[in-house]
Amino acid sequence: MAQFDVHRNLGASKSTVPYVVVVQSGQFDRYRRRVVVPLKLNKSLPPDLFKTSSRLNPSFTIERQSVVLHVLDISSVPTHELGAWVATLEDSGIEISDALDELFTRSWK
Image (cartoon, rainbow, N blue to C red):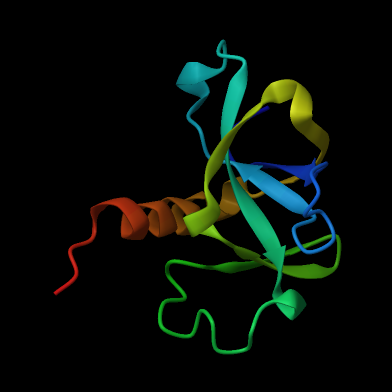
């Protein structure tokens, strides 16, 4: 389970959130939980929901499905509750890190 790995969501919301992406640093791999961000189906979102900040909610294609990083629903889950590995978003790590930066460190006036 590496940082930016995408796993199937096994939870009740899997019909609209089929995947989660691990955002936790590999420094904490010995811990039995992972910090994840949901990847929500783009078609399940209101069309104007994320127009104000694509930096906060970048889009990706996983298994031919358009998904949106939903950073406001970040959570920690036990490793045994993560589904199968599907893909990696390592090449998009900067976009994901930028979204987290936007969430945690940006000042709004």
